[in-house]
Length: 407
Image 1 (cartoon, rainbow, N blue to C red):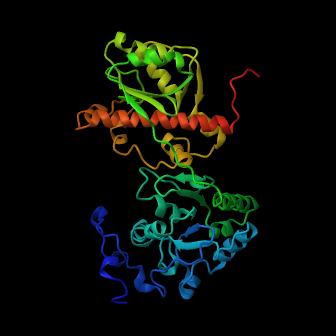
Image 2 (image 1 turned 30 degrees about the vertical axis):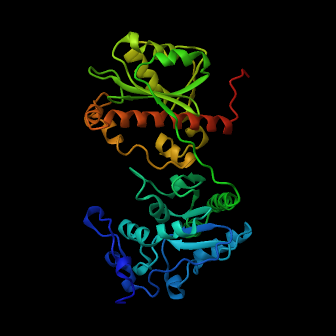
Image 3 (image 1 turned 90 degrees about the vertical axis):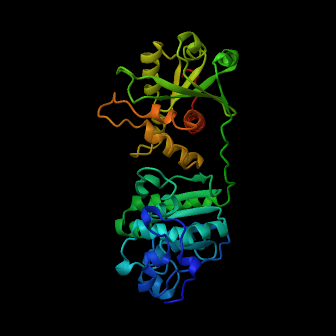
């Protein structure tokens, strides 16, 4: 196979862990019949399917979805009015067949993402990307997602308006999993998820607004706006998880009071300077929203000696009510699956995790403040937390048909 790939194709400028992300370093192309399988499909409906890897039949025919799993996918799509090869484009997370149909490694997926998958997305600009199984999730998100990604059971069922690629992203089970399980409820879930993907192809993609943040040097403007505020989602950045130990304090806060108005500020040292904030928090006319409200409530009581008035919405609890799967209620996950924002926290988040044991351990946020631009970055992060809490709460209320009128 010498000369099959150009120097440009086998060279990478990205070297995570000292490894080159290239076909040459991956090496799968050496032992398969159809190396670097090209995308296949006429793409009439703008749907891009990303599978796992070619199997034996696909490798022999140099075309995706030729085996048993492909027949199930083709049949299910046909019932939904979609032709797998006329209406879709098809690739895999790894586009050379692994020996013995082994599950592709993360490194192999990383290589193929760099060499082929991202280039296909950029060139074809799909309306919908259907991620079929764990490998496809890793391929699409692996270099953008911070922390534990989890598997397809966590990701399936969401219709994500990815803001980087400006398209809908719909994770679904891989058809081989559906076949192995051979259970009616699994087939039903899979079919409904594919139905969501098909419908998304005819829906306009949703652009998520960006927060408009006013950074306050002092809190006196809050007093001016207070009579006009009906609801506020607010967030604290603190020195730890729990406020009870000596040395803990609230470092900064942000509140979103409308889709186009977010305030962010460092917490003043004196109670007098904090008073406009305290007046807002204790105003019974203003609805209070948070993501895990017990956190803001406990810190407000312990540090400010006030009781927050008129708690109305906890977007973390609402996320659990709407979908009780594990590991899906965190704000960062909810922000991505609902609004397509992948990562806004990776620079700050490590400093907010306490290194000591116990809930009262102190984190490293003070060290982050000492870094060049640290204060501005912390305030930006806090502002985005409150802003996405606000958007999420609004969306949840609409889904749940919430009203604050008495029943």
